Amino acid sequence: MKNNLLLEDEIKEIAEIDYEKDEVLSAQRQGAIAVNKLVEEFIKTGEVTDNQLIALTLVRFRDLQVRDYAMGLANAENKDKLFNLWYWLMNFAPNGYVAPVACIFATCAYEASESELAHHALDRALEDCPNYPLALLLRRVFCAAWPSSSFAVMRGELHPRICATLFGGSI
Image (tube, rainbow, N blue to C red; front, side, top):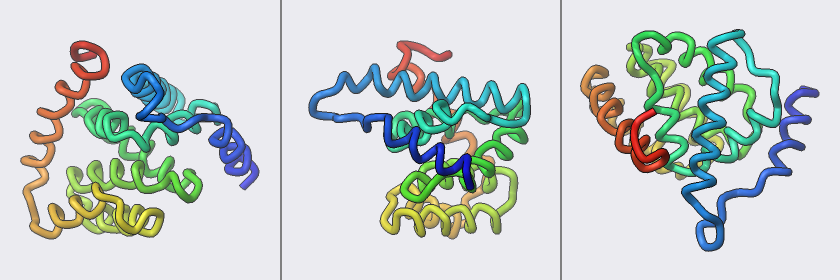
């Protein structure tokens, strides 16, 4: 609980992206870089202890490009580690920051043929934000029993486009 309180303090220090005033692409790129660091640390050590990094990632996940960027990072080599990372982060995130990461975890679970976990993650997302558009969309997709392989292909096709937007090419 103490770490979560520290995390909430860190979150308060990070400004949301102001789409009217901020240089949006720079803030989105900052978020994607934070996601990369979070993933790298988790894959290397099996944990993330930097509350500033976690807070920045959670705040930037409110941006659709950053959230979708993170969703596209899973591949054959890292999918199990990312499954564990997103599950941990979904449970560690404070209220108001759960929905995006819960949706990312739901896609990992669905692609791993863990439908019950995927639906549970969507329940968590909708508890956090009852009208979260991606959670509602994923619920329809999962209930329609889309093959997880076609979902993975679609996600894989989207990721290079997001990379191009954020970084001018894939990374």
